[in-house]
Image 1 (cartoon, one colour):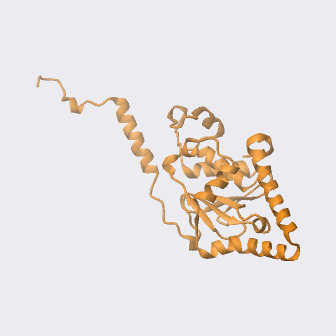
Image 2 (tube, helix red, strand yellow):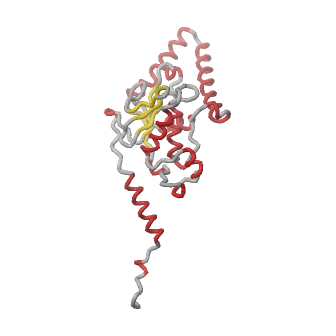
Image 3 (cartoon, helix red, strand yellow):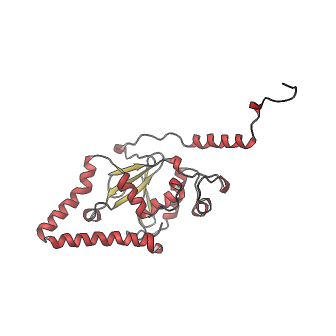
Length: 243
């Protein structure tokens, strides 16, 4: 080897060094999560669900949802100008789904976006960590009026997922959040299943016994109208619902 020349293995482009350092920094920030512990109501980075009084008795697939911090603390939009912390409204968690932080976009700046929606993501409000996204959404919904039909707990979770750009998508909405928990969520225990479906079964049986088949027709019509409202507001008249 000639004098004054460095071995090829020692030469490394500056941008590779920067990218390597950046990757190590991001991986360092995604520290290991604690265990899911239903007894202590700790569900790190999870979506959580619980049945609603009366509403879930008629339509058991509709309930109250929240999202959890990295330490497992539950956060939910449970009233006008109020986001509850570590006090899940309407009872304990019945169903949960843990999300993958590596599927989120945590840019340091506009040039650092890893998602394809970088301009829209920046406009929505980017976050550098999971908890930062939840904090931003909390501040936003602390000035919102709660309404079951237009601005509810699903709206809050939708806003969080869009700030995270979860799975590279900025198109999260009330329907997709509900479907995510409905089809992929895990029940906490058998009691949670009973708590979710027993009142619905009792109301259905009592209604058919006292009123007959007209009750079943009316119940089905109510469910279809409720679903139709959210589908209409989500996909055809987007100004109806807030997220």
